[in-house]
Image (cartoon, rainbow, N blue to C red; front, side, top):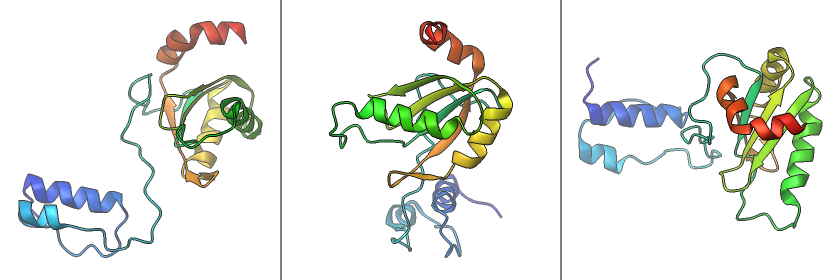
Length: 160
């Protein structure tokens, strides 16, 4: 099946939304612009498109994870909300293995960085946490490159 670039983009967007009513891809740019999601009762898809401060995610398991969509800094009201979320994440993630570092990025779209003592622990955490709901938000869990993680958070890792 041959698709124009516009039709391919529209099809990929519809697949990413999990649209079960896919029948055919739009054929023109106008069709792409007029494409509306058919099932508006679904929760929004997890936003995996934005990168954290460490750049792209690792395609292979590492001991480092980035949890996305954990919070909305605009809606947090408690003065220590960041510490509360860090504690919740540390408590939950310690079920998978030793958490040696945790860093919440208050200026992000809900990003929490984690480093486990072992790759196996991070693999278990990623499998359980990816797609899970936390405080009414669906989270995403991605591996991060170890060397980049350690270079960026080196001072924090050395203190813990």
